[in-house]
Length: 201
Image: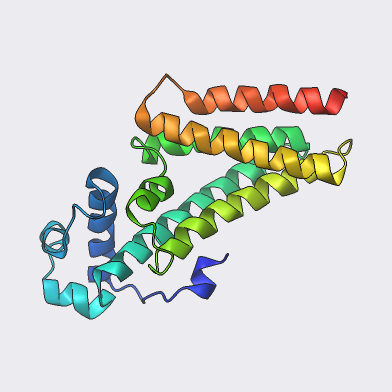
């Protein structure tokens, strides 16, 4: 899913960008339902009227927050994949390493999409498509990378792609819950062990 193509997005003025930055910090740190428009306006140094003039609704602020975070993650990951060696196993490792680096700087509470889905489970909510679209994109990415492993048949590659996705997403949840140290690195190591196993069969 291309969020910029399929979702209604707004043109960002400087005031809207300040508001979005404030909303992003607040939504991620406190939760979407816990943060109201009054608080966003106060944190951004704008009026409520400005918020509604630019975004139209709190729902649209949530859409912009999640879509912006998704776009920044995809750009961050693309840079890491571009710099990775061309071998499929190295590129799969690069995804986990990118997530580990992203979480260190942007994700102390885990995945923003998973966190948002805990509060927005209604498919009719406009932000729901951003959340599910981002996860589908990650599954598609892992599947493409698995299909690039030459020794694997298509069915095995597709199963591997789903398993890599599960390892990755589980690690993001464990990171947010702080269940044990460095779960993304652990997931990366398990992914490498799995790749070694399936390619040696």
